[in-house]
Length: 302
Image (cartoon, rainbow, N blue to C red):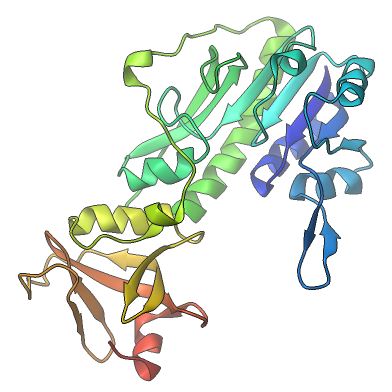
């Protein structure tokens, strides 16, 4: 099949790579516009654009998805299918162009966690399993008929970084399987069950701020769901401290009746929460590098 691939971040690269290596043909790649970065204001490409150019693929980076020249080019390549992985919301005029439709790879088991941050919210909410879904695009975001799904277990040691990588690679395999099934007509569509739908909104700074008046388990899940980026944080004496890794040691007894109280040994940092004690294993003081609790306590104290 002739494919137009649309994606922006690193998460989309394995899917594009699988398409290039398959019997199918990536005839065009669409990604987000280039950006100026750093003090020198150097132009930088998105990860997908950079990968596509290295593989000699034509890349479009439209500012507007309703641009007439952009739409005309999409029509001109005469693709059979549009494949979307971590891109933008496509207008109807775009996603209805190919004869076999357009499908999206989403980082959750839809209809759970519709929105911009499905992987983060699945961990923050303490889910024991998550996965990837391919579905046909419709006008309303993340609501189209499901083509395929694949599940993975979320362990207590997993964080955003590890789950992201697992789903990135699992999703690439699911993308190829989906394309093959569409080509052969062997798909069995499943409508989404609206009764179990839940949102996964964009992560904001307010969401990242730790509230010690929550239970230790909830805070631990927040830390996991935001590590390594953007990272949960707390304020202490006017400075911010990012937390990348934590644990709940049930052998450590409650040491204060007030949430947010810190306690340290020579190598360990503990915080009293509303219910239980949370141990901080890796953190980053404002303006400094990420470090273990032991490294932190060599030069800092609370």
